[in-house]
Each structure stands twice: as C-alpha cells, then as structure tokens.
Image (cartoon, rainbow, N blue to C red):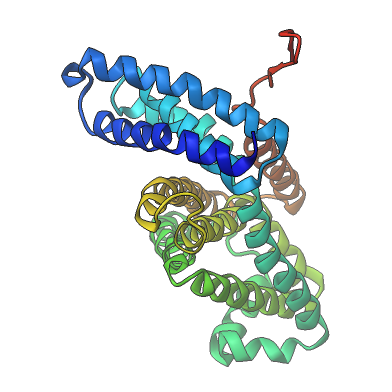
Length: 336
C-alpha cells in the first residue's frame, strides 16, 4: 500500500474521529453516550496503528504530526479523570508544560535563535561601542541605569528596599508579560510579528547590557549579580512566548491534512498553553527580580543562586514528564 492509497482509505475514519472528539471534549462526562465512547475508543486504537505505520514507513512529517495530534487528543479525552482544579493546573506547570514544549522543540529552537543570537551580538557591540545603547534606551534612562549599578542597589540598612519591592514586582510583571504577549499574539501575522519582537528585544537588551558591562568594575559585578537569577526564568519565558507565536503561525500557514480552521483549533490550543506557561514563568521571574535580586548580599551568593536557577530551569524543561519509550518490533516483542 502506498501513501496516497493509505490516506484515501483512512481519511474517513480520521474525520469521524475528529468529529467525535470535538463533541465529547465539549460535554461533561456524565453526558457522554456509551456508543460514542466505544466508537471513539475503537477509532483511537486504529489511529494508533496508523501512526506507527506512518512512522515506520517514513511517509512524511506532516502526516505523522497530524496523526500524532489525533492520538494525543484521543488519549486526553479518553483518559481524563477530573475537571480543572488547582492540582491539575500545578500538574500542567510541573509536567505537561515542559512536555508540550519538548514536542514543539523546533519552534523553540527557532525562537531561541532569533532572540539569543542578536542578544549575544548586540552585547558584544555594546561593550565595544557603549554609545550605541542610547539608540534603544535613551540618554537619560541609560545614565540612570549606569548610576544605579555603580553601587549596590540597596544596603543592609536601606529602608527603600522594603517600600519599593512590591512596586517593582508589579512593574516587572507588567513589562515582561507585555513583551511575551506581543511575541505570542503577533504570531497571527504569519510569524513576522513574532520575529520582530524577538529580534528587537534581543538587540535592545543586548546593547544596554553591553553598555553596562563596558563600565567594568563594581558596575559590571552589581549588574550581572542582579540579573543572573531572575534571568533564568525571564529570558527563557520570552523565548517560549516566541515559540508559542510560531506554533500559532504554523497552524495558519501549514495546516497539513486539516483545514486552517481545524488546524487553528488544534494548534491554537497548544500555542495558548505555551503562552500561559511562559506567563507563569514571568510571574516567578518578577518575584525574584523584585524581592531577591536587590537583596544586600554578597555577589558570590547571587552568582551561586543564579547558577542553581539556570540548572533547575534546564532540568525542569528538559526532563520533567519524560516517559519510557516503548517500541513494538515486528515479532511482537516490546523494547523500552
């Protein structure tokens, strides 16, 4: 059987499965009809086989992705056990969110490249030509930043820390979530808007960072020890928001075997979940930036905390929710 014949013969079942899935996902379980559930379960098993066949014969990543989405949707529908709650939300953040991000690693990689490369290049340029930072930050704001990092933000006896931290927490949440929302929502413009947000922010942040580092001495130490901890969540979340924007763009530009509306329904939800997860990360970053980063403690302790934060974020996003991969060979044996 070739690919075209396979699609012709199986398309009807796939369409019926999507139809049933759409009906049951929008109904409480008490309203499910047993015949519908039985049919969905039967189609789910057959589509699992279809997916394994497509994977083994390498009939194209788009077809494989389409069937994989059907299988994932069927699994979530058939095996859901409870309505949304605080516990399920925490479970999503701890396990579901990093798992979804790994499934969309291509979008994440593209977003990371568009943000990190300009950021690194702009930082180097900012160190060599610190005057260029004025183009993105403005003369007054840049001078205020340089002045603030020329000495410790707060001292052990400075009462400003207690009064300002809540205000700064709110400011950081508003500012960072604004950037992330733009990176996500502008994905609807064929991804062009997302590219612009990532590139422009990578360049702006990099130039300002380079200008501060060019001062050297206590200024550079105070700055790096201030940003290293909360940056693990903040910068990563901006990249993930960009990935969410690219997933949204893909649903419109490359619908695969679906119509654009169906593709938007499936992948739009994934995009939104990625954006929500990055929003939670940004709130966490704002807590650290407002309450921990300005603490009057030795820079060494902040560097250690920052290294630990980056490690934990990497382990969380890279390993949380991983499952053993089970492969059934041609003889029917199971390998893990």
